[in-house]
Image 1: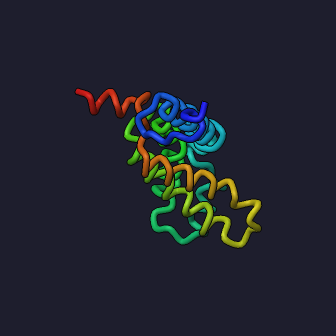
Image 2: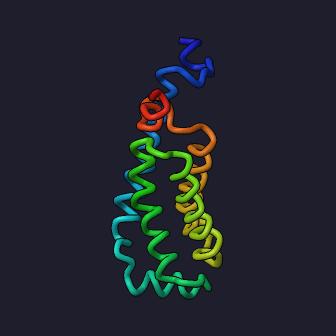
Length: 138
């Protein structure tokens, strides 16, 4: 019991199972609750991206939508996890610090939770139960 509660080992099965559960929840939540509804980007979303001052707002709207949908799916699968976390994390920086800059913390909190989830996944990787692991073994 003591070993299960207090032992820290990055290669343990419980560590990798926890990463899998975390990746599945974060990735699928982002993909289906946030990303899917932005493909294709609506006029309102394009207007919001344009109002933030991005050049080529249509391109940036598509990049944001794809980072949320495909990035979320890739994170759930553990495929190109660090790259996907970087892309999605960048989108969450824009969401938290630019799109919702004037909003109270409670509004931007979700973007920050996804941002720091991406930071975690970027730092630790996908774990044993991932497509990344299968690719790296070959």
